[in-house]
Amino acid sequence: MGGIAQKMVAAKKSGATIFLAPADNCNEVVGRVPDGLNVLKISTLSEAHTALEKIADGQDPSTFATCE
Image 1 (tube, rainbow, N blue to C red):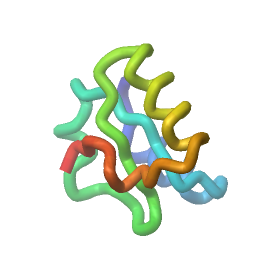
Image 2 (cartoon, rainbow, N blue to C red):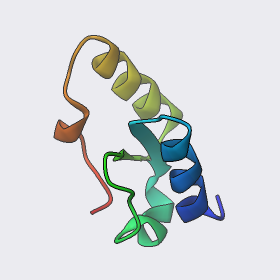
Image 3 (spheres, rainbow, N blue to C red):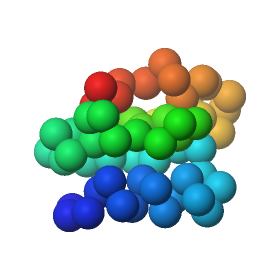
């Protein structure tokens, strides 16, 4: 997934507070996360689904694995 830094900025500008980043792209995330955006490190589609379910159930996204 290329251009992840730009995608994070666009997501934040669109009102997103959570961004799912592929684990393989973490090197592009470090130091580039916009303020107020929680970037979750995701390795599989199943992991992404589980994270979204937990967030929907009220779990704080800042408690999930991140790239930083």
